[in-house]
Length: 438
Image (cartoon, rainbow, N blue to C red; front, top):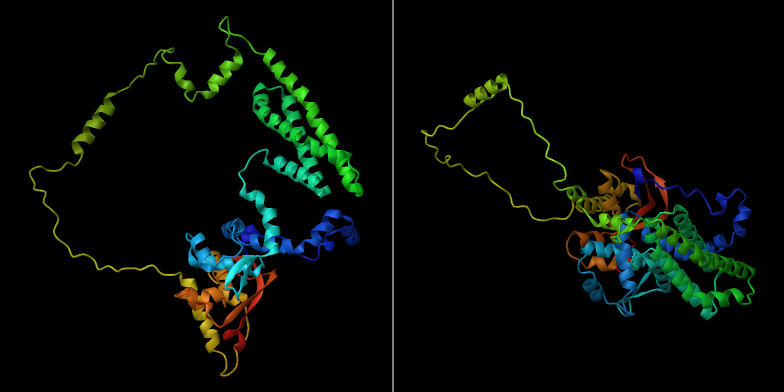
């Protein structure tokens, strides 16, 4: 569900319905490949859905689990790993990972393990766990292409992405050379040398890839285009060197000291107090003070009329007063959690004797109040019927033991609520007798 300022586009139909001619969707190789990976796409959507903070929490927990060397995890291991999280936040996150088939609970062994789908998704999200750097993207792409070529698993999509990255680097360095600015050239020189070093280290694998015999015509076409992009970047080295030499010739030497204008510029850039370099070079300017008789009279009258304490009067302590009665407030769970438990209990009691209560739409339990309150109630619904949360004490365990289940659908429906524009479609249905004793 989302707030009104952050509305998403409506999913109006299938992938083919967005094309002018639906038949053209099957002619796009990338679109066809994405259609074969809908399971990973749905898992990624479920992992990153909702608000930014919630999506960040799920992604952090998932990447931490994927980085563990253990194949099997007990619940106690998870509690120790995520001891800094609140219990309800951890339970909700683990429930979402189980619903997405990323985390599998083995009832026989009483432990968790990551599914094959989680391993595929972890390889897709692995770059997020690395430190940010300007050349990380090209280094990763070069490593992937070189490794795939060595294993005989070259992919045209990887080569195309690497070619696009080389083209962007070429255009960026070309703009720096065309500017003629020595400062920009000096700043870009380390990144340019890094790019040449990366391309040179992967040159053997790229050359073998370009000269190899491939049955896939698209792979051969992308390999030849990558060779041209590599040659363009390598040929720019002489242009970059000439631009730096031209900047060196434009330097001005200050007298016989050997100090150039570039040295002065670099020194000034390291100074944070340029205004203090003048020192006493400029004489102090006078600060005139203009005083007239009228202003003096007004100041004197105000000074005489000012209230002053009388030293002859004793200034004792104030009289004793009775302290106001206070109350001791203990930390308690949010009111929305207790209200939701009471609402579910009232629905159960309102059912006819011997008959289950009717199913209710999700909006009856979620909407009401501000957006933050509705969002909190929406995040509590996955706890209904959760086996792990049922063993907890307090209101969280009471909610999990409520005889209701939340059945949500991936589509969104509009609401008349003034604070919530759309909400996930779904119903709250009562437990069957078999499920309640499971």
